[in-house]
Amino acid sequence: MSHIVVCRLDPPGKEFEPLDCWLMEYFCDDVSCDCRFVALDAVANQVPDEILASIHLGWESVEFYQARTGCDREAAERFRAGCLDLANPGLDWAEAVLVELRKEVFSDPKVLTRFRRHYEIFRRELRRRERTAQSLAHGGLNVPPSSKKLAGLLGLNKGRRRPRRRF
Image (cartoon, rainbow, N blue to C red):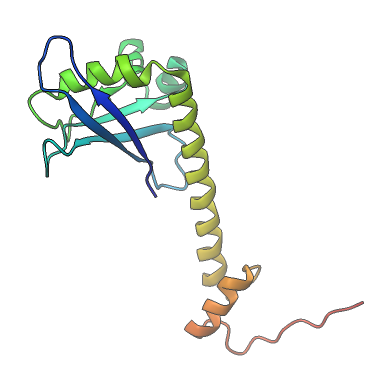
């Protein structure tokens, strides 16, 4: 599941030409992890087939990220402000894109609230899917009706009787 933020980047120093930029949001899909950050890929139609910058951005306190990762305060502050993903740095001017995004997008509290809300929606859906998968693995006990139908089609609930209703 991903969401998209649209923005226009026009740097004053003209490190690059103005861009219509899309931020594609991605979240950690490890059910046991609660890292509370968004991974963003900045893309633009003016630069097809390229990721301008891959960015990690957190919205919790600096202390939260220090406690979670064991990093120093400076690293946690960079993470909280938005930092480039070192494994996927993007184009040569990715740092200039990050600076513009910090100024134009990440400084808006509504945007951070939106990322947090999308994260919570994603986590709820992830937990729901995990519960459904666990229920199917255990013979379909406590499975939502749509999943019971799927379990029947897969032959996972053969030999089970429906419990009688008592009124």
